Image (cartoon, rainbow, N blue to C red; front, side, top):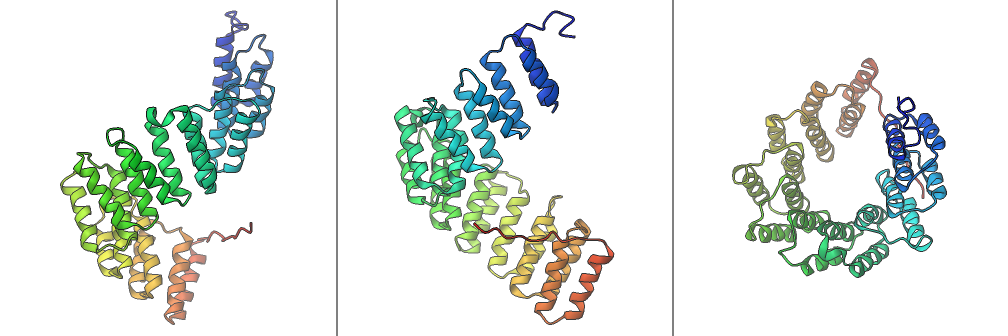
Length: 357
């Protein structure tokens, strides 16, 4: 159609056509149009690189990046972000270094947001500090709260909660948004610092910020993992529902069941699981089954397993765990019975694997 209308030499139309083919997964025609274009602009190259990256063909995307006459920050950032998203942090960081050192291209805010997940994925605290120093010199911290929040998160996930908190308190309260507070609360939670997370949550409330679903998951996790009293946990849970009118989802209920199982209150956890008014409840029951394994409660485990079979009969791990619980309590015939049920129902357990680095 574009040929009939005389658009074969129109760079914007042909670029859009390349993009259309790539969105549809048609790399052959996209390459054909690209190769036959008499003129290409930076957008054309970036569309090709973005399309190939989105399709997971990083090798070809890199080939086009190498051939691109005038590489831009968009070109580099696209592939850096792609690598970070598919859990290839080393490749992302290597490409980031090449962009800065070889092409002398200055990263923008989007590049920083793309590289930080790769940094914390590797746990590279030194690299995190370098990125922080760079964005400080470029003035990104005062003007882009997204970069600020990502740096807090990166420091915490690199294992340095002190640096995360120091950076957080340096930011004026007027600049912090709900994501800033939630990120810091979550940081304390993943480090098992329940009291600090709760204190941070209350400071946020005093400033008039209302938590959202993610904030509440963070503070509930902090209460559970930080070893705080169940009364405090339940107070937050009730506040979420009654004061902030947040309807609990499977993650909130999961935190509640997790807290009860940590305290050994398995029967109460079972009652909660029975009352959950959501479809994705299998994950909560599975969490409870794991607790039964820890406490060698075969009777409750059998009830939980029956409930799981009503929800997801083909999950092999449930049968195996139940069988192991029976073995652990000396009920070997029951363990054998569950193993046979797996065979009869054609349920397969995914094999485990280990990685040596």
